[in-house]
Image (cartoon, rainbow, N blue to C red):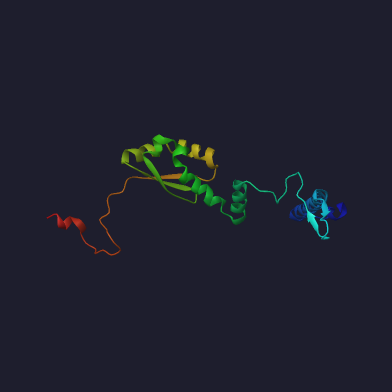
Length: 176
């Protein structure tokens, strides 16, 4: 095999080394599975074999719920959505009660967290605290979950009620 590798260069050499490593891992896993197989026992009178789990851990043993949910979320690609939901759901624990009382996380898309402050003064304060909030969030949920914070101030009341409206001056012309 080393004679074959002598003529390879660059990406071909790396591809060949990766293939050899995968084959070695597959052989090792096959040998390990042969050693870990449960012992078979003949059930009296019926002639069937029953596989016993044994004293050691097995895939058929009951699994903790958190581990099962984690495995399913990883298999289906939901892990990024779960970390986003963690940021929005655990907001008071992540940033502290002082900050959480004065702002609300609105959305987290593509690493940008949008916060809505209760007043313009708190919007300014949150803009100055951005770096500290980013380091707290990175320590709690991971470094690349929240990369930027966008702070918006409070929004005014909406005079639209219902699905239809007419363009114009709106409520101003009713006050004389």
